[in-house]
Image 1: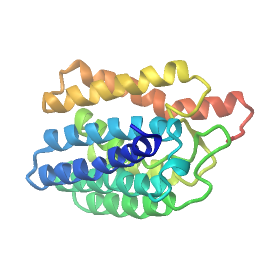
Image 2: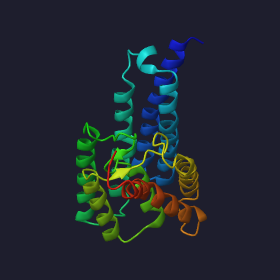
Image 3: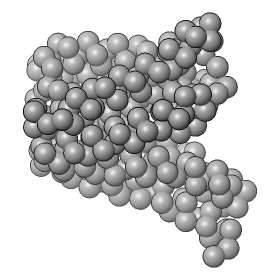
Image 4: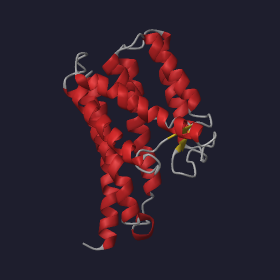
Length: 232
C-alpha cells in the first residue's frame, strides 16, 4: 500500500467517528443509555488512535485534500459535546431548570472553546478544560450524584474551559505520559464495563472511573503547580 493510501486510510478511520456518533444518537433517542455510551467509547478509542497514525503517516503532506484537524473537531463536537449533553438532559438526571441550564452551558461554551486558537499549550496539553463532556457525563451516569452536584460540576468545568489551567492530553503530553497512557486506557476499560453492566452502582468500574477521572482532570494543574504556574 502506498504512503498516500495509508494517509487517506487514516482520514477514513477518523470519519468513522461520525458513524459511531450517529449510532450513539439513535440509541440516545430510544433512551438506551448503556448502548449509547458503548458507541461513544468506541468513538473515543478511534479518536485516541487516529492522531498518532496521522502524525506517523504525515497526512498533511501525503493526503492534504482532507483537513484532518477540521474533520476531527467536527466529530469531537458530536461525540464529546452534543450527544453527551443531550443524554444528560433527556435522561432526567438533571432536574428542572438545571437540565436546561446544563445543555445551554455545555453546547455554547464548547462551541467557543473548539474555535479558540489558544486551546493548545507549548507541551501539547490543553489550556482550559478541553470539553470532554462525554467523560464527565458518563461518570455522572455511573455515580449518579445529586442533580445540584452535577450542575455545579458542569458550571465549574465550563468556566475552567477559559481559565489558564492546564489539562493534559494523555497521548501527546510527554510529561508523565508513562502513567497518563495507562490511566486513559484504564478509564476506557472502566467506562466500557460500566456501560456494559448498565451502570450498576456496585460495579468495581465505578470506583475505577472515579480514580482515573480524578487523575486525568487534575494532572495538568498539578504539573502547572510544580512548573511554577506556567500553562505551557
